[in-house]
Image 1 (tube, helix red, strand yellow):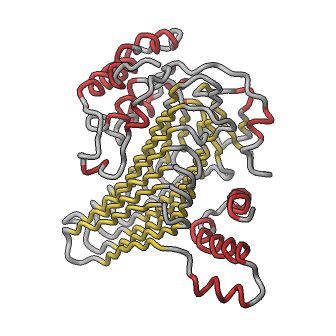
Image 2: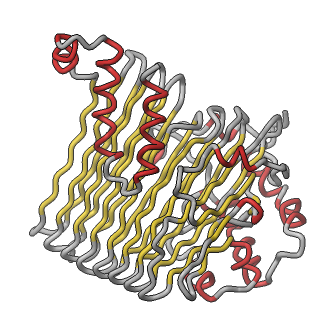
Length: 437
């Protein structure tokens, strides 16, 4: 294995990436890539000495020299089918090893002027909405992995819902990685734009059905216009030996409503950075998360809710279930700026340790600079309620069944907030397989 420095590797191999674009280099967009590469080269690799990475050691990630051009593979439809939800697949975009697969995707009738396409198509056409919104919310000047994603942006999902339009059925986007023996990096870049008074539900799904070693470095930008409603679900089922680094940046305008649900079970190492900003009054935001990790898996949720305007409400609730030697991190910040009077903000993190060797670091934070607000936060880390388990056992329920029932009850607080019944059933099945065996 080569021991080339992580940053140097991507700088030296940028030309190989350029060749893989096969003429898909529009002059204006390729300048964005090169500018991002310059920023990437100037940034340091984060370490545990950096406050934002205090509990997250990325040395397992940066020790590899990942191939910058993922291998092409002919994934069979039945592999994709493992990650579909029964009776849900009305709109489906499929990417295999970062490559858009039109033959495996399916879009039914969409409202007029609604666009659900791959990002590469938007780049080729210099789509005005792409040029207006790309990179505006996910700043890459101070984030090494975002700069890397911007420099190597090739494809991802692009959704534009014009003013007043509604996409009735969810859009399910699957990023499936099939690594085999090759170690590579995929860098999906997604841009979702919901203009004023529009509505859409999006499922961003990262998955693999093998044990390959790869790095998935994704960035998602979401614009939620005035009175628009966006329901976003992220499901992470990467290979147990994979590395997943994801960032989502959300811009919320006046009276918009955004909800996020993160369900994470895969990857040896995963870090998720979520930020939502209120840029208009009367906005509503909900961030829910559930992670279930075991063996030596590592999970990190790094969230920020930025109350920059008054009369906005936010609700954040993350839950974790840790087994074996798993390690988890929750670092959530709620910022209430001086002008954000009449803010309501609630933040909570609860984690259950099912092993004496599991470790959870929880750091909920409130920074309040306004005086007329209602804010609360809290965190708990502990074991299953022994009194509740004892009660169930006195009713003739066995040890394992009682444990499974309590875990289900713990996880259901997050699962039940997902509006899509088929997805809730899919997740219930995952929980059952993991804890009822």
